[in-house]
Length: 298
Ligand code: HMG
Ligand code: MG
Image (cartoon, rainbow, N blue to C red; front, side, top):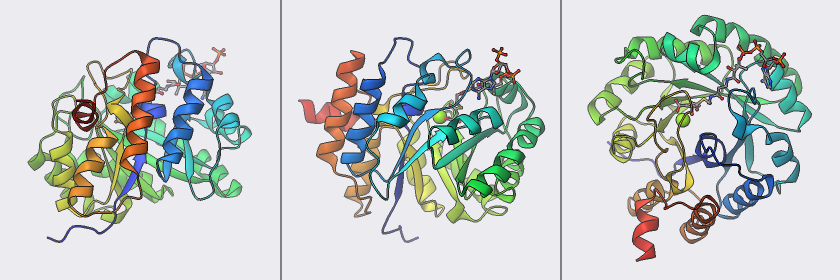
């Protein structure tokens, strides 16, 4: 197995990282975080969500955040959109790339977006159509690919079926989310093998929450399966409000450290990334979830 020379890191900290925070975070602090991540060289930053503020109050100010961030040419600033209402709000806020999110488990789909998996796919169809007209790219997510907080085990075939639908409807990439972090390396490899038979591997990404401390090794396992795009969150912030116990995403600093050590390019500057993480942790009054950041503080 040869490793890739380049990996694309998708920074989800401002969205997945902050969506679960109970304390209010000002628009100015969110803008500062996105700008610091841009400065660190991230090429894709998920800035926020256009979801119901009753469901996820923390994402309510996403339009203001989009209006105030510095848009660096070449950097993608993305947003989650669960339905047409969210998509239209995103377009009105000037968003150029969105993500739709489905699940591989029925129970999680109901809890997260209040509809079945097939209803969610039906909701996405007009988004895809309108996105094509507006020249907006759409990324797809599948949650619970290695376990569900309500149903337990999730079959890789079911993950493949949902991923295949998202890809077929026009998502240029499908990110497979271990929402509750229960996956282990062999399950990760098996899952990518199954999904990879239906969606080209260069159109798949890995999204690992580190709840059980498996995220880094699962990323390594994914690299062995030919996956070259990973979602991560600065300082390991995050969790999904509809997945109890889902702790942070894998920390971007830690993924970067491993990739740097393996000679795999990302275009991200470690020192600037550490500063971005330190700043948001100060704002939140919390200790970083990144092992690298902790080691560097000593
Ligand atoms: P619903 O209650 O079924 O929606 O929620 P509805 O269509 O019946 O509308 C109810 C009210 O919400 C109406 O307002 C709508 O206007 C409003 P009212 O008449 O009561 O005043 N509404 C909206 N408001 C703002 N933006 C919208 C919107 N849509 C309706 N887009 C809905 C359905 C999908 C909206 C809701 O369930 C929702 O917002 N869910 C979002 C949940 C979420 O954001 N979860 C976290 C992100 S996913 C994640 O973290 C996983 C991931 O990281 C990968 C992984 O880790 O696995 C991506
Ligand atoms: Mg997530």
